[in-house]
Amino acid sequence: MANDKNDTTHAASVLNDPFDPDVSLLHGTRTCVPKGNRVPGTYEETVDRVIESAVVRSIFNGDEMTRRTFIKRVGSATAIAAIASLFPLGAAKAFASDGSGPLEKKGLKIGFIPITCATPIIMAQPLGFYEKYGLSGTTVNKAAGWAMIRDWAVSSQVDCAHMLSPMPLALTLGAGAMAQPFVMPAIENVNGQAITLRNDHRNVKGPQDMKGFTFCVPFDYSMHNMLLRYYLAEGGVDPDKDVQIRVVPPPEMVANLAAKNVDGYLAPDPFNQRAVHEGVGFIFKLTKELWPGHPCCAFACSKEFATSMPNTFKAVFHALVEATMYSSDMSNRREIARAIAPRNYLNQPVEVIEQVLTGQYPDGIGNLRNEPERIDFNPFPWHSMGVWILTQMKRWGYIKGDVDYRKIAEQVFLATDCGDIMRQRGMQVPESTYANHVIMGREFNPDDPEGYLNSFAIKRT
Image 1 (cartoon, rainbow, N blue to C red):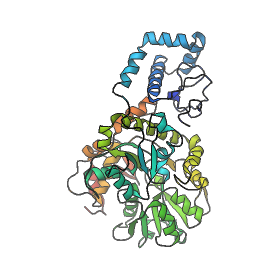
Image 2 (cartoon, rainbow, N blue to C red):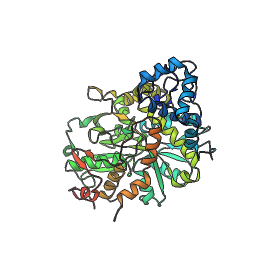
Image 3 (cartoon, rainbow, N blue to C red):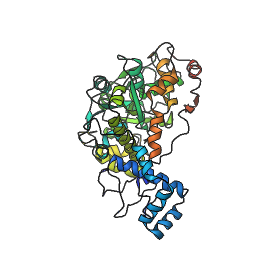
C-alpha cells in the first residue's frame, strides 16, 4: 500500500530520507529503505521530504558518495543541524506549505472507464495514493462509456474524472455539449492504443486496403478518432466518405468484432489484446507507430471544482502525478495489473492486462512481440499537444470558425502547474511547454497551426 510507512519498496528517490546514508537520492533509483528510515506519510511530510532532498542534493551538488560518507561520519542528527545552519530548512518548508489548509472535501468521486489508460487513476485507490494525500473515502466509479463520463462530470455527479485528452477542450469550447470550462491538470498515459482488425483481414497492408470498412472508436472527441482519421487520410482514404466510423463503448468492441458488425477498431487496451485472447482479431498496428509518445487519456475536472476546492484539488493532483510516476516504472507493472484486474475495476484476466502493461504479448498472427513502450505513463500535458488536437478537431468540422489555439490550450492544459509538481518529485520537466511533434513523418509546428491545417488534402474545413 502506498500509504503504509513500512512498505518502502516503491519509494521514489526524491522521497527517500536525504539524511540516511544507506539510501540513494538518484532519480530513477529503486532502493530498499532501511529500517528506521523516515518515510513520509502525510501530504505535509511529503512536501517536507521533497524540500529536504532538493536542499541536500544542491549542497552536495548531486555527489552521492560525498553525501553518504559525510552523514556516516558525523551521524544524521549532526548532519541535519549542520545543513540547517547553512540553509533555513524550516522557513523553506513553511513557505512551500503556505496556502495549503485543510481539505474542503476528502471523499471524492472519480469517474473512470475500465481501460488500461486509466491505470494511475484506478490503482491510486487500491494502492493507497489517494489516502496518502488525505483523500480518505475517495472512490473510483466505473462508467459504461465516455458520454456517461461527460454527463457525470458536467452535472457534478463526480468531482473529477478520467477523460480522453480532447474532451476537456471540447467541453470548454461547447463542442458536443453546452460550454463549461474544464481543466486538464495531467496526462495519464501516452501510447497505449492499437488498430485491431478482424481475423479475416490478414491480407490488409495499409489504409488503401481499408476502403469500405466499418470501424469503431470510443468517442468523437478522442485521440482514437483523431489518430484513425489521420492514418486513413494519410493513405488517401477519406474517413467520412470511404469508411464508416461508429462510436462504440470500449467494453462492447470485442463482441462487435466477433459478431462481424465491424471490421476493426482503433481502441484503448485491454480490448485490443482481449480480441487476441478471444481469438477474434489481431493487432494490426500500435498507435505509437503513428506518433511515438502521443497523449491519450487524462485526469480532468471542472474549473469550478479546481477553484472552489483548491486544497482538495491540490491533493488529488499530487496523488495522481505520484501514481502516474509509479505506473511509469516497468518493475511495478505486474503488481499494478493484479491491482486493477478485479471486477470492480477492469474486470479482465490478469494475463491480458500484464501483456498490455509489460509490452510482451502475442499479436494474433503468430508473433510474440516485445514492445516495452506499448503503453507508458507521463503526466506532463504539453500545450503543443493541445494545439495539435485543436487543429484536428477543426480539420474534421468538430469546431468551426477562428480558433485561438494557444489561448485555449493554455487555459485547459495545466502544463506549468503539472511541471511544478513533477519537479518537486525529482522528475525531469521539459524547459518549454511547446515542442514540435512528428506524426507519421509529418512535422507539426505549434507556432503555425493554420498552416499545418491547410497542408492537408483531405479535410472538412
